[in-house]
Amino acid sequence: MTTASSNSSMSNGSGKVNTQVSLNSASSVEAAVTQDSNTEEMMQAVRSILQGVGEDPDREGLKKTPKRVAEAMQFLTQGYEQSLEELVNGAIFDEGHNEMVLVRDIDVFSLCEHHMLPFMGKAHVAYIPNQKVVGLSKLARIVEMYSRRLQVQERLTRQIAEAIQSILDPQGVAVVMEATHMCMVMRGVQKPSSWTVTSAMLGVFQEEQKTREEFLNLIRHQPSFH
Ligand SMILES: Nc1nc2c(ncn2[C@@H]2O[C@H](COP(=O)(O)OP(=O)(O)OP(=O)(O)O)[C@@H](O)[C@H]2O)c(=O)[nH]1
Ligand SMILES: [Zn+2]
Image (tube, rainbow, N blue to C red):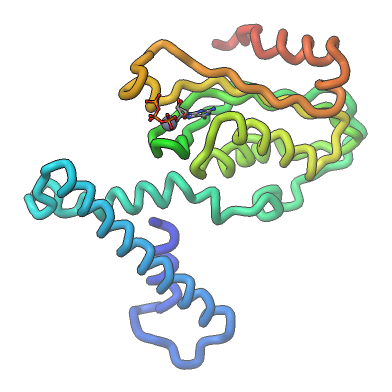
């Protein structure tokens, strides 16, 4: 991963090994070494795939491909290394606000766990606070963290809803995701126009039809600035 490999060079300073490393930097050196060996293994695997498709991994254009693919895969799955707590970073505010908060049209890029092919689309995330609100960007960051993993759309949708539930204990959470799956577009059943809608409704969104409808109307309506 780009970040991890830059970490590894940072932790070694100018490349010399510092013999007076503290426990913390010793463990970060260890993490960097593990990361490097992971990258190495991934590069080997990409070489095998290239050979498997009948390519010559040593030809000019493909020489750096194993490294590029390994780094791209590490980027696309960086959500495994993030935690909800770090991501929210304490940005929870006691506003006494109890009306619906909705962030819609959050871009989603993920990989399906069955084929490791992209699926992409939009997520709409709403909650009804119980006094506490969270920084708006954190809702998009939560979407980002769970999408940067190998996923199925249903689980991704539910994990986003449950994460918001766990940090805010709100009156309810609603998440709708609309996505197109490259494994259904480029291969397999080959249906380029199909898209999949999943939803997760918790608390009042599940219990009260009126609240759920209000949310569904809000995500249908086209904003005037578009
Ligand atoms: N429920 C769900 N299914 C998914 C998702 N992403 C991919 N799939 C499906 O996972 C299934 C895997 O089915 P398999 O029969 O094991 O694999 P396959 O032979 O490659 O299937 P086809 O895609 O039908 O060619 C397919 O039906 C995919 O459409 C997702 O996010 N949610
Ligand atoms: Zn798939």
